[in-house]
Structures are given as structure tokens and as C-alpha cells.
Length: 338
Ligand code: HEM
Image 1 (cartoon, rainbow, N blue to C red):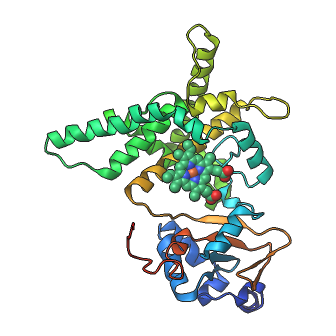
Image 2 (image 1 turned 120 degrees about the vertical axis):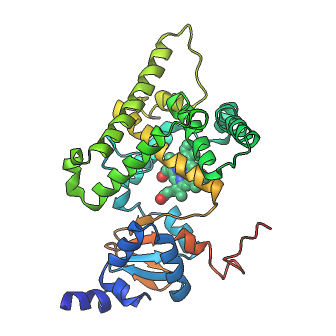
Image 3 (image 1 turned 30 degrees about the vertical axis):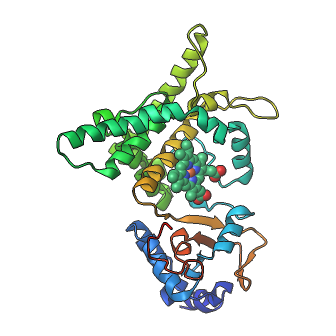
């Protein structure tokens, strides 16, 4: 009892507004996250309590635009929840170590620069946009309705397939859903092991999910081997304008070391997850969501000019609520592209 009272009333987070239950427990936050309602939950909390809310006994939710920018752009590392336990190594996206993130970005060089993106434009058009238009035209000719979400999902997967694996997954043309099923299963496996880390040693219990993980790792392996074989047969090889080639060619700026095999496998699978659902969701229903967790630096921090946050706390960045901030948007819930 004393323990709960201390959490609720005698920690620096006690001054932050929010429901009483949240000040003693993280259960409401876990519940809404697992149900997929994290974004609507934080929107309603911020509408009631303001731009900073206590969302768990050691967690706060932030929806203030300038504070979000400060947290994202300065020395608040990613929360531990990012770390992957289903890939052979941490990646650019999953690492909580800012130095490793910087190293990977340097190694990958100009992969995501506008100039490099332009070199991939023809591939993106051929395997994604034009294929999708062809499929939709065929459906419309038959008098059938087109499903925009499925179409955009196929488009995203096929483009990433050809850019990262060197060949399309053929989701659009052949309706081959294996890759989409597998990546979703990998994410479920990752969530299970994140919630209960002890299960990391027993992933074989989840036969279906582990099989999907194995297939994805193997696909990345095959893509790397195939590309390296092509490169050895110099007579037929002309460098591909794709992300796989960038990974194979990546070098550390200092010692010129190439990426290790496990690093490449991990980065390929991370990119598959990071680039597909995000793109298809953005095309179908432009809404920013997701649980962006940041740790607090060891020296602590002051947020919104008045709240002291210790390094033991975590900050959840609610993009969904910040995009509905009435002090920035006069009619935050109205879709008004003008
Ligand atoms: C509309 C589509 C996309 C959206 C909305 C989106 C959104 C995001 C967001 C919000 C983050 C930051 C996550 C965090 O720090 O918690 C992120 C990071 C990242 N995204 Fe995307 N993304 C999209 C497409 C892509 C694509 C197409 C790729 C690759 C081909 C990609 C690769 C990455 C990588 C590598 C990171 C990690 C960057 C770092 O931490 O240094 N994303 N993305």
C-alpha cells in the first residue's frame, strides 16, 4: 500500500496530471496498446489533461509539438522496447545505442538521399505503380470493385521486394500473400518476446511464428548470396540501383570494413518491416500513430518548462494527439487539406 501511495503522490512524476490508476500502474497503457487502441487512448487523455499526461507509474505521454521535436532531435535515446530479439543483431532502427545508429547511417551513406532515390524511380514505377494500375484496370474492366488498402499494401511489398531482395514478391500480379503473412508473424513473435523476454529461449514453442522467422532470414540469405554471385560473374554484372546493392557495398568510413553477414540479414529484415506497412498505411489512411518510446538521459530532464523527469521514467510520444493539438490546428478533427 505504502509502495502504491509513494508511486502516486511522492515521486517527481506525481505533479503531472492524469488518471489516478495510471499513477500506480502501467496496466491501462498495456491494455490499450495490446488492443491496438493506444492512439485513441492518448488522444482522449491529452484532450482532457493537456499536452503532458501521466500514462503509467513510470511513463508520461507527451503531445506538445516543440517538446516532441526536442525529445526526438536531442539526447533522449530510444526506449529498450525497440531492441529486437528476433533478428541476429540490432539494426539502424532497433538499436538503443546512438553510436551504433550513427555508424550504420554512415555505412549506408547516401542510400536514402534524394539523388539515390531518383536512380530507383524507374524500378519503383515498373514494379509498383504501373503494375498496380494494370491490376486495377483489369478489375474495373471485369466490373469488380478495387480494394485500395490491399492494392497499396501489395504495391509497398512489391517495391521493397525488388529494391531490397532483388526481385518482386509478386503480391500484386499473383496475389502471393506469403511475404505479408510472414512479416506480420515475425512482428507478433517479436511482441511476444518483448512482453515476456523469458520466452525468447522457447521460440520453438510458437511453431508457425518461428517458421515464418526462419523463412524470412533464409530469404535475406538467398538475396545476399545471389547478389554476391552476380557480382563475381563480372562479365554479366552491372551494378543494380537498389538498396540491396547499397548494403552489399556499404563500408565503414574509417577502416573500409564491409557489413557483416548477420548485420546485412538483420538490416534487410528490419527494412522489410519498416518500409511496407508504413507506406501502405500512409497511402490508404494518412494518420500518424504508433508507440514512440524514448528514455530519459541519466541527468534527467525538465519537460514543458516545469516538470522534472528522472532517468528512470520513459516518455511516450503521442504523434496522434500532437496532430490534434487545438492550439496549433483550429479544427483538429476535421480533414482539411487546404
Ligand atoms: C510513409 C512511409 C513511412 C513512414 C510513415 C515512416 C515512419 C517512420 C518513423 C516515424 C520513424 C521513426 C521511428 C522512431 O524513431 O520511433 C522511421 C524510422 C525509420 N524508417 Fe521509416 N517510414 C516510412 C517509410 C520508410 C521506408 C520506405 C524506409 C526504407 C526503405 C524506411 C526506413 C526507416 C529506417 C531505416 C528508420 C530508422 C531511422 C533511424 O532510427 O536512424 N521508412 N520511419
